[in-house]
Image (spheres, rainbow, N blue to C red):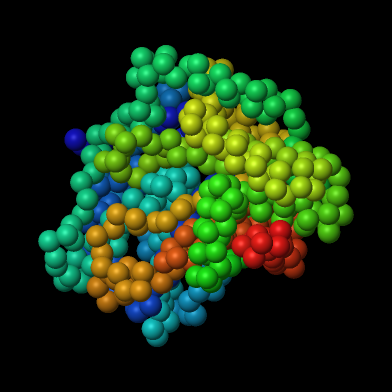
Length: 447
């Protein structure tokens, strides 16, 4: 099916309004390889797979009062090449203007024996799961361009026509009706969301929307835990009867609370951590890169951090309830309601107040179904080996620190994205060190 134009979903439109010059709303994923990337093979791979992902080849246009994705046939992302040390800071970039360009860029940094490939994607076009679908294609296409051949090595089937139903979240009228009793479980959370006033991690004022982006955007700190530490984390979660995601969310809260107290914000204000929730159903297996997520909001105060075990149980129970009842849809329902009001989505995206203190996103294990061969648990794509993956979640006004986790080759990586305008590099180092110390205490049983 050939797509030329698609109306934006409520979520996509909300994320368009979230984006502004002072706070670019991009996500980043970096692939770190041993070996040098072949420019011709990479460009050939990109040319092969871009038509499979229409939202990544689209620009934003207004048609009357409705925003549309308009596919740009033959559009290719800009690939920026540089020489230098790899594994350092992510390449500095800026805001992506979807009215003038497609929502994807690639940055390649090469040394004599290694390469970093960083993808910058506008969040309105794609979420973390969607960018993994694209990366899976990219790795396979690169290996094919390098002449690798096997019966298993082929691009997976995708159906761009399914994008037309991406905003339905697998729901029919009767499925929605059947789910309503379970959705009632989310109503207390909706009430708490509007009744509580979360605080930023440290007091500060947001900058005007039309200010330039932060210097060195994206500013990050990354830590990769050893294989032994990462495996111990999984063992600890199993022993405690919770998920790894539960443990990470708990330790994000504990690290934020400890860090705030050390930097003069030891009050008992509400901290709100947003957690993205994948809303794809089994029918979305053939969906190209897209944004099919909801969000849930975990609220805790400093007093809740005094008992880490109780905090973990509460978070685990809350996230289990959310998953069992698909409560990530409550956020989507709210956006749809705001959309019925002229200017409602923009007003709610651009409110000059703190609505989220931090974000914690977990990409899980990228490439689970990738058919590429492995060497010591790492994917081999022709002449390069994928050694590590890390990623960056967006920042927004009054939300100057976000966390994103990846788990690849039996090693957990956590990346902190921070805004260097309200906090400095030393404070960012301290926040990451605080989280690392907390998690190591968790896996050693010394929480």
